[in-house]
Length: 74
Image (tube, rainbow, N blue to C red; front, top):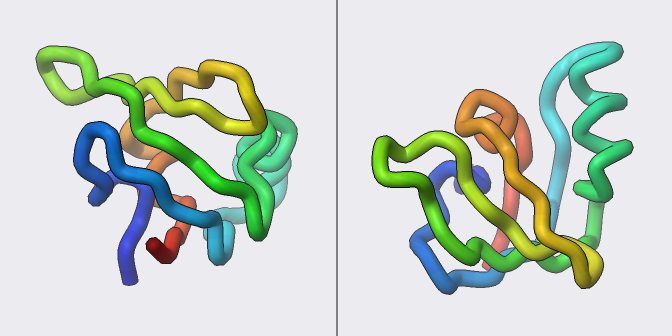
């Protein structure tokens, strides 16, 4: 299983499935990370957290803990 956390800078992937429960999953979906959406990893902070993504033509910063809950396929 590959997650957003496993992507390398400048890679693009498609969201396959969301893990998590209740409000956490809802928050991820509210950020635009839903099944079938293309996600491009723009850059990662020097210490690795947060990650900057391009989703639905906008920039999104997400923590690695949240990125682990988003399963992707290339």
